Amino acid sequence: MRPAALITGGGSGIGAATAHLLASEGWLVGLVGRRPEPIAAVAAETGGLALPGDAADLPHLERSVAALAAAGGTLRALVCSAGGGDAGTALTQTEAGFEAVLRQNLTAPFLAAKACLPALIDAGGSIVIVASLAGLRAGPASVAYGSAKAGAIHLARMLAVDHGPQGVRTNAVCPGWVRTPMADAALSDLAAERGGLDAAYAEVTRHAPARRPATAAEVAATIGWLVSEQATGIHGATLTVDGGAHVVDAEGIAFLPPA
Image (cartoon, rainbow, N blue to C red; front, side):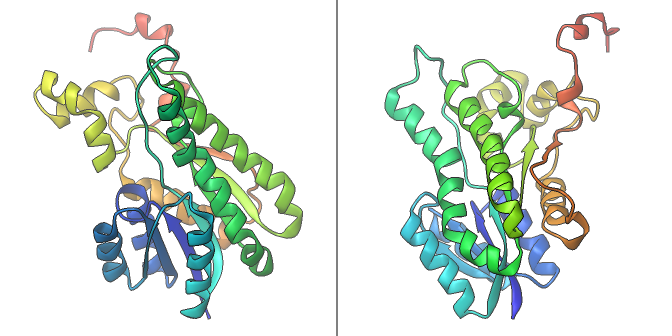
């Protein structure tokens, strides 16, 4: 039996990069996502299982766990990478929009954990929830996304407390700006103003110590370490992969010398 990982949002970005990394280390990866074509492409590239469907659909998630077992995998990791945002303040965000963002970013990892925990308890596995720097600090016009990601961080802590004694480690990863198709889309308006995506990424990371966005591979490497035997002492942690953006004092930026 091979170690197996179920990855939600596995068709692109961080989820796809994590699938490639784990597959290169001998894992069987099961890829959940709503778009069949990218899921199938990553499955073909990694020798994994394409399991197209909604990451917030509990019966589908349970079938996905069963499919991994039928393919000879022992579920050792759940990586919750599915998510998405919708800009708006409390005045402009709709109730339906708010609930949809919560479902993508908070309900989905809860349901994935629910589906995977029996197998993870048996195998002594781990869960990684991909949250966001937006869950650690407040940004403008992101009331739904920031609230959902803050909830996802605390969900990881609650799972750690409840299921750590059963042998399941749970941790959260909080990326900042990562160069992915989803981030490209989020920066499209700024890119139009600044003359391209390179300029837009430079603008949004200009105060981060790294002065650049992370790559999906860098986030995947953090996830891969968290699910490995090298991180067996790590429970309930929140790891930032943000080029150091979270340590920057927003008020202190005023004292920086001109670039």
